[in-house]
Length: 304
Image (cartoon, rainbow, N blue to C red; front, side):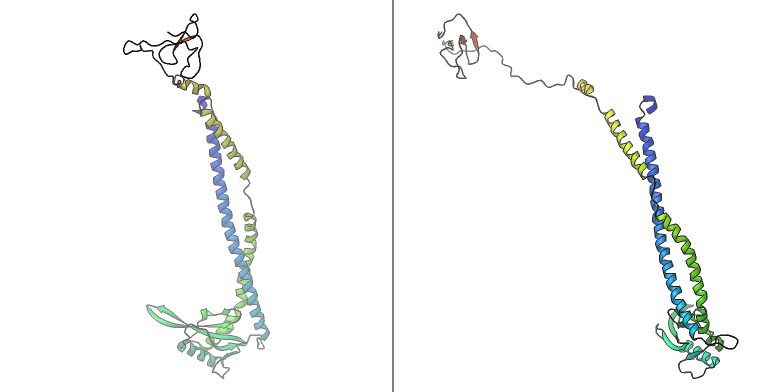
């Protein structure tokens, strides 16, 4: 229609609106992606910080253990465990005592110390669990440093007293592999964080173009509105024949009716005042004030 009419303004407007809508959608997607990246950056930065704290604290525990651990001739670490109420250093005796604690102790959800290993406290905690619809007391054991370390999720080997006694040495010896796991996670995070920082630091490059297009659209809109508005010539033609004429007072001459035989007086206004208080020379006032006949030949002041 625009092409046929020879006026392409409406077509240009549609093209501008389409381009603006496309850019606004692109900007919305860009901002959403940047917000997602900011959230990921915050999350991963926090994770890296926490992992580093774990590594430092566990490294401190491991170094402390290495400084006090004893070994045999072959270099194997000795299980120098001590359990409260047990004087023997025999691992089997100690293991049996730990098994008894696992069966009979109830701590009410509190960590309770029952022994130590190289100065690291050994503690047990009782937790209520449901198994096959029945409630049981589950005792779990930990060896405590900066963190609580467990082996076999804190459960003792109930069939083997020797394995039960070595549970805590095994738990401490798991510290280096755990440290390595956190270090591996940090290596990945340290690669991802700079990439996310680069994304979050980007600025959408088409903002200036979008503003320019919106300005062009506003100007084109004004042009179209002006073209659609009626011109003064058309307005005059539309109003032609509809002009309001000024109201005039139409005075009709009606014959004056007289009562009786007394005719109206005709006075020369030279000696009389009109209704307005002015003298009118050489005029004859007939009937009511304001209507008069001019007579040049009648003497002034003549009354009829």
